[in-house]
Length: 378
Image (cartoon, rainbow, N blue to C red; front, side, top):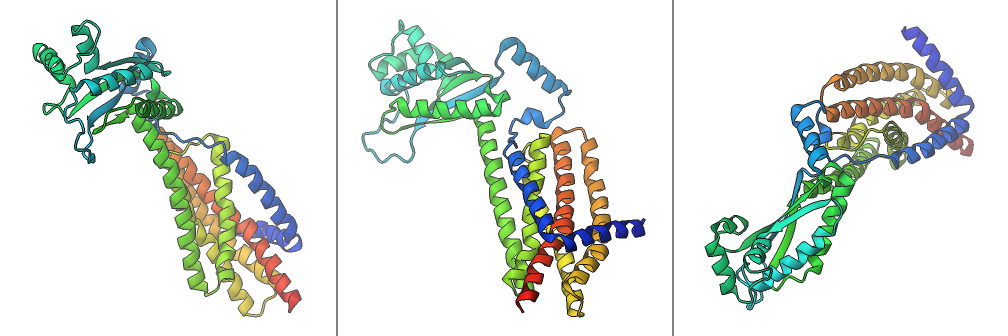
């Protein structure tokens, strides 16, 4: 088996030695195609889709949504602003100015898509006061005192009140994000008086926030991983050039993996968002092994071509063996019951495969091109 593997690697090495430029161009074309796939990756922040769809709780949630149209709750908390420095700021949310602003906000929210109902203290006060809000705060106090059930909508110290919004936006992360942003805009347009602030929360807001965090953390961790690994390589080799040699193919591999995820429909979620950083940490070892063996053979006096062939054949076979066992371990996650873990297993499988491919197919061609140029120059 090892002999067959080494023979196959020798053929690959011969192609890389004979046509390194062609191999490089081919890898660049694959990378461009992968960029298109990476653009197709979607973030998955809907927690329902992270779990098995045959769970009774998930089935019940879907049933409620199909029958009643809405099963998610969004809320707007209207409260005294603790950061306000206005000495004339309102100090009681029962103030008619606050209630008028809440009424304006409710009217705007009711016009939003995917909103089924909006309810707050203001609606009951209008019901008990002939359809209007009392002009004076004393009138509001009298209504609340006469109807104790209204206290469910207001804090005991009268520092905050709540607006309840029924929606179906939590089932679609893009709809949830759009609804949350629209409500935040509605709040800014409702002209709350000085000393009062309103904040939106609930399932759609949580889904929207998770989606933002997934995308932000993926970009941040991938960038930091690249920087940290590159710095360590530069320090280890005492050379920027040698530090870049194993790093460049890995960057190609990251794009290949992201492209495959996009084409295969593997989303970014709380689990898969860390795979790119893991790929950089795991995959860089493959490139380092090839580069170190190449440098070792060159130090012995081998030519560029011979050193590349030896590195690909000897180190490549070990890389393929270790990659295969690692991929086998990760692929076991696909047989779990949670979709999120299945997707993580698929992403990790691609992670190792693309790391291996970039190290074996691209890195030797780069070594050939760069070191031959140096030989010719000298």
